[in-house]
Image 1: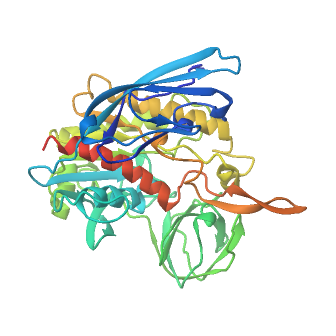
Image 2: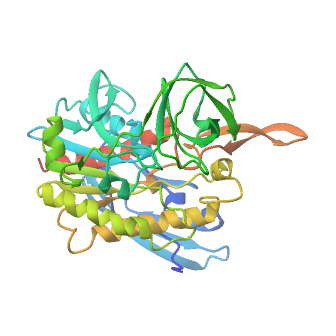
Image 3: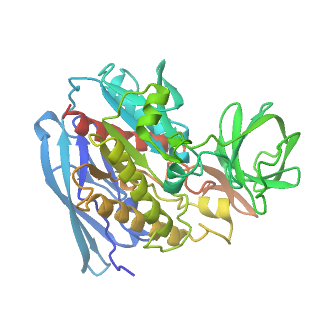
Length: 436
């Protein structure tokens, strides 16, 4: 096993006037990084017990080295590493730039794409938008509304790299969307188990009028009927039965062309009358990372190059930006979703896998065949996993009603957490769109 503790990307993109925060949990591979003394050395910014922060001014445009040092309680240096902070000043592109965002459940709600778009293109809000109106076009068949405008993306819950290179038809593992006659489900109910017609279903995505369920244990029939009432089974917080109005199995791969039995991005663009993307952002994927302490990522390493190579072949002028995944819950969300058995139940193992996978993504981007058009965008260290994951205030024990924070979702953040991913997207946009 790699004994390295500090994991820093080669660089971070910062923006004039935008508060940059670097959370130590996202750069120190440990269950409790605060057992170390963490020293930050940089010509700019300030460091505090949980994070480093820097809000650049116009005069700060440029590059700055940031060094992270870890000491034990005897003041002995254990390890150090460094990165580069690149401060960019926002400028509108000289033409409208087309962008395609591809992802899984972290993208399916459109939260981070909306926030990045809002901050770049619209005015008002917090933080206040730049107001570069009509400067970018986010394409995609899945739509989201932001400030009276409609933007697109291709984000699908449960999907990973292989899903985007596979056939579009429903399979024995296809998830299902159901329309319901009202519900009061919240993020606390995600990954709860429900029963319908003797099949188990796991709640994956919650929207106002519809819900997405993936298959539970033993549920592998061809498109089983989902009718009547969905009944609560395990780990359900809001236990009211769900009256089912209709159901539809997961929409097929939007890039899949039936007549050639392969993905075809030019066909996809023509089919939906989309402009060719200048930049493609890919955020994939916690799905399939079920081996604690994994370093090989067999499923993703086999399929990621296929998607990337096909994308570059069809759209040779498009830049590709690979976004890293966020950390799993460190306040109990993993246990709440997965209990003490099965995949993803080992919190430290998941943390190691997350760090290792992000490093693998960055190293893939740096390979000779990819480095000219691909870059890694580090997310996890700009994401406050301690405070922006869903939680409940539970009694500290069964005999005392003092409350404490207990996480109740393994990998899906609250809206404010998605917005932090949107902040990373925004910082990348500012850097990228200077070139257009």
